[in-house]
Image (tube, rainbow, N blue to C red; front, side):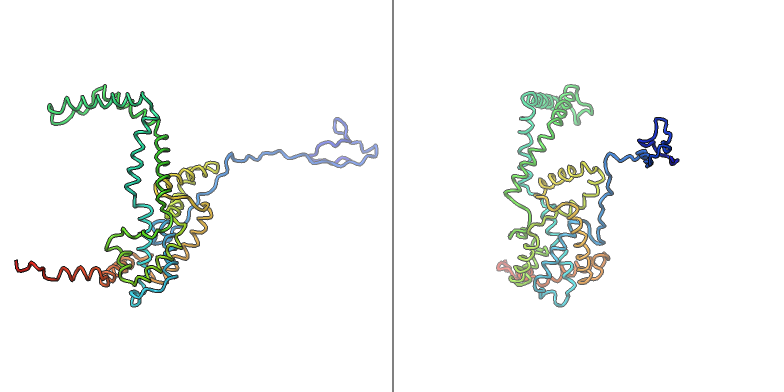
Length: 355
């Protein structure tokens, strides 16, 4: 017999769906296919990747660099100048880390800035062609006439520019805007060529040579024996061989990049950011961002534990941090042989004192 329900007629049922059970046939009712109503999103959305920055750190670049410096410090013999105050190891590691970040991220090369500026105007001339050059010459001539007319006539220039100067300036900067992308591409190509000849990855032998005379790296190199500084510096080079502080800057920028992009454009967002970082800081890129984030999370916990073991409260209490930083500067200033030599020379009588 037929089974009632939401079923479709089997092959052995008639056109109107009547049962043929009287013929002796065995019927197997087939359930009707459910109506497909699911609607998938056009683009799969992911939650923003937001790492929690540990207390006491300003950026992930600082976290990753502190981790490398602390490992190099632990691999070296303990400096004798810290025997009476071992907690000063914490401000020393933080000072070396800040010097590395400043050098790799904030210490811009005047040679690179000059090199990038040299390619700007020739690129505009080449991209704009003769029409752009003629427009620029006309604008400059109009500006020269305007300023020469008011040079001796008034103490201040009128607020509104003449229509000729205004129109030429508008057309000139509109033309430059059309070729801005090409100029940016040429600038980055020049920067890549510069960083290829002057790599900034890792720590070269002359990394701290231009440090200030009263800086922590310079004073520590003079206070401790030469073999200790060489031992520490060699281990620091080994730990930082493939490292650049921009690795941490990528983690700092990653939440905003994820917020601006969908899954299909995230790679393009990161590629553009990496290209800008490569031209500004000499960064070559590194590990995939998710793997980098996993490493950073583990390294952050290890770094926080290291500071808490050496100097409890250094990361979380600003007063303790300032006190230890001050004590480190005072200790190295007192032990610095260069400072004592200068003080002795100042206190000595001049050979012209009788005059």
